[in-house]
Image (cartoon, rainbow, N blue to C red; front, top):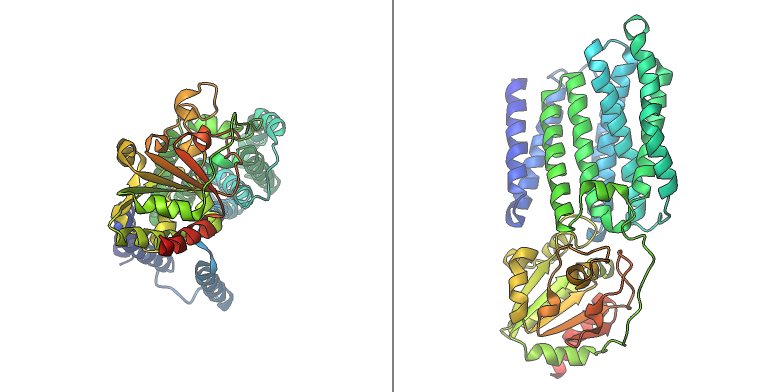
Length: 451
């Protein structure tokens, strides 16, 4: 019966992963994934509920209740940080499993190295994810590249020396607890230092990479405790995470090694312009939109910070009521995690069919009447196509500068994570509406009453 439950759980996990591929089926996928995880947890009891004391069940109840409370209270703009924490706790849990099994000194000799690997990767993921969350929240912006370079250079021998020592006497004495704690400390420090040097612009890629590592750690832990479902679930997370990481690297025209090396966004800021931008007002924007037949909205992190998705929905409804065609152009790395913009727009019931990927929308920009850019910067910077010295050169961007008119809603002329000026701001077909995204859009909608 347990094997049947595990088989059903595994099929649900795989089917859920397939349904996550489309926004329209993602909600159903979440339901299947929850059911699969519930069955997986149930199978761990092996129909013997009496062998656990009350503290165990209280812990499960409190943990489950905490998960419900957090999911209800978290804002959509905080979702990247929550995902980062999930990655960290998943990796930490796998590392803890490996530590417990290693400390028993009852593992077969062949499993010791798998357990050490799982423990090291799990603890690395935990500390790295905590740092990623701090960087996403703007609490950690320092550059520790020198320290990271030194630590990375000495990390292999630091990890190998105690391992070699214990391997010589493994069969006689087993691995020492002191050595386990040494590995844990090095892994924790490694995660902190490695992620700390990576720029904020690369955090979406780092989150996906850490997600993959948490799956690999879980899969390794599954081999140690002979859990088929842990192996399958870990393999799914590990494989999908690394695929997503590589896809996002491709979207930024970078390699995973360049991302892990760090430094993107830490270059000297160059935000000088040869002329002043053309400013506009909400009233002028409303007039301009009234004469348009087609409008494309480009959401960026500025929309997320301002929590302007409801205002975006209101503007969309207003434009559609005037028979104006409205589309949304979503860059793969817009926001702070994959799909961040899609989630925010879906929250206010923006039609999935109105959301277009970079490849789908780029060929249409030359025929678009008005493009509204909401807080996006590097993903619409034309220097990615023209300036070979630019840190974003070669990165696929949304070609909004080819549209007939561009309205950039932004609080200031401040640069994006790459730290460079954006010539789109001073283009002849561009106008700047200096405002918070939510406030600016609300004023535009109100101005339609006067048009």
